[in-house]
Length: 301
Image 1 (spheres, rainbow, N blue to C red):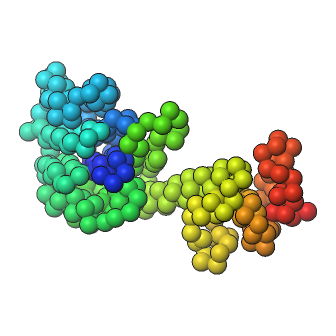
Image 2: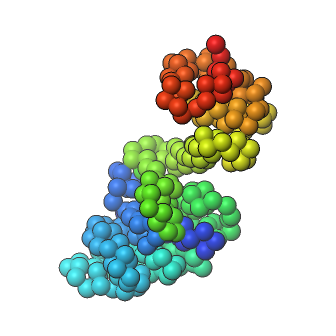
Image 3: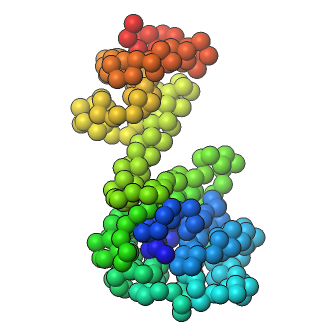
């Protein structure tokens, strides 16, 4: 019984669901998405049929309105449901049943919709749409802004417990592991939004660094450096990251671009923080993944 927002970014076609609730593990039941087809949020007395069969209907070519109307017609208790759908064309359909606990309602914006029940008042779903529409940038970050705005407006009347963000691409690439951009959940926490904030930002940095690492492995060192996320410490070498994987991959990217001093500095930091990972990284040369010369310039002896 949460509050949620479902957008489609017109610039990228990416679609998402962000949700927060006092209920346990809200992301396991509310959020549904199919890259290239659409997203669904089903809540109040949530019925998984709207997610599972709803995505099937969108894959079959039905619009959001057609899919939601069809599912309501076979639901024995549609008055208990609150459901929102976005299809691949960005068409949005939302339904709030008469038996949803107040305050309950929804608002459809230009390219998003917010839906909520058991919240302080209509300002909760209004705040989500307003916050989303006045921000720019990557979709996962905008969704977090919307969730914080909902909480600032009163949020779930029962309190905080769980939250989730799910974002998928506009088209299927044939590589499903790349088609889901963000899929993060906090299931049971006193500060689910704060914790999810940190996870979403780390997810952004993590995947950007992996993309840069793969470019470096393909011999595209300068392009790889340009793809790296900005250093957290502002000094050109990201020693503030506490994830050893990010330190290693960043060091290899910098080494591939012949920025040896920066790469060796990160290698030394990594050796201090995670000497075992340094020894594992030496196997990259044996596997033919990274040139031995590059590892020798990056990793301390």
